[in-house]
Length: 227
Image 1: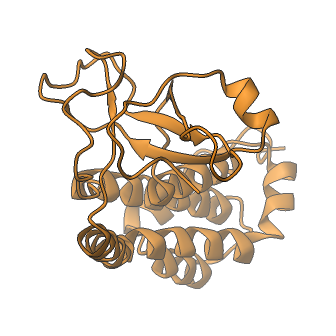
Image 2: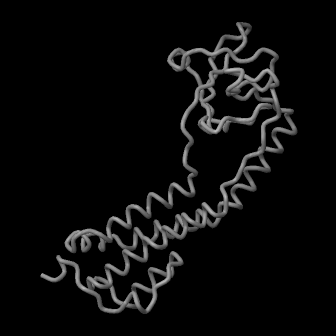
Image 3: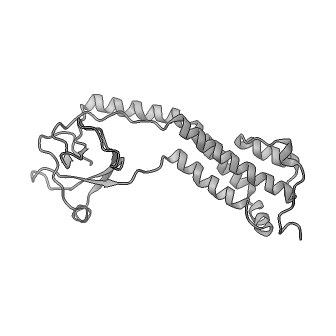
């Protein structure tokens, strides 16, 4: 069950609390552009909830509430793993040695995140084609939130817009940032003598990170490592 696909009357606002208590289902949709455009100050998503009502009762009412934009999974996954691995690289050597015990796990996590980003366009194409096919075959119409009408737009319901993909620049930046974090961690492990040159290059290759000759040159030891 979700937001209504048609109907002449615009949705009437009711409280989220009453909807939840009566057993609602929730759908999250991107806010569509209205005939007046979308003010840049508005969040990019709304939560649409529909009250469950007995057969033959009043029409269902759609709840439209503003909510903050959600990060894209492919980018968020890479960022989360990058932040975690980057933190390992800055810890004391006894902590570094502890994380080294799980090195294979974290390299596998990073490689998985890179693969998730690399596969994004194929997944998005399947998602877009499936949605477009459904909308066409079912003549789907949606009343989007309108800041001018303060609810369902008077020009609606309208055909839903096609899904919009994440920019290639955002995906590339997430991938590169993750690889930089892995490189930083591996270089720290190498200089702490927890891995050798063959191992650092093998692990770096799994995520597509580059290890330069300069990375392997001797450097001032970490304060913990000098003791």
